[in-house]
Amino acid sequence: MKIYADRFPVALRQLLTDLLVVVWVYAAVRFSLWVHDLVQKLAVPGQKLEGAGGGLADNLADAGGKVGRVPLVGDELTAPFERAAEAARAVADAGRDQQELVGQLALALAIAVLVFPLGLVLFGWLPLRLRWMRRAASAKAMATAPAGRDLLALRALAGQPLRKLTRIDPDVAEAWRRRDDATVDALAALELRRLGLRSGR
Image (cartoon, rainbow, N blue to C red; front, side, top):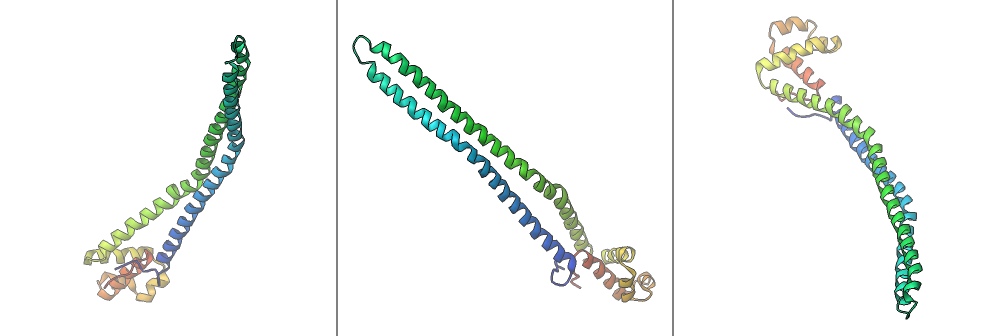
């Protein structure tokens, strides 16, 4: 018994659904990264502000140091340069803060964009896929035992369309009650096909 996707539409639908989910998750991640990069571009002014402020502060501090070496009035001349350097450092700090804020916003928006598509996968597709895997595994285990095949045949009688049942035998229920091996096998195989499996018998 094995997954049989080339003839049975259930297994083929499972495969196509899995591929679509992979594409969906990939597209969601790519879109999230695009949003992150787009928002992150807002940090460019902050980077320029930090660079300009830091460079100006260094230059003013250097100039103040040189002026401070002037005899007698050096200390008095240094004070304006120090104040200006402090103001430039404040500008650089503001640019750095703006970059951090934009980075946090970019991360928050990227996560927010991912929540909905990943939520659909985790809480919609994944439980259904796991349930199908459990049912398929149980059916696979049952099909190896005579009693299990009989139970699969009973499930087929209860859940399969009448047109499929009558193709096996016009009086399929009576044939099942007689434990006709061919009928039981055909009914079990019909139930396995519903799960995208085939019988190895």
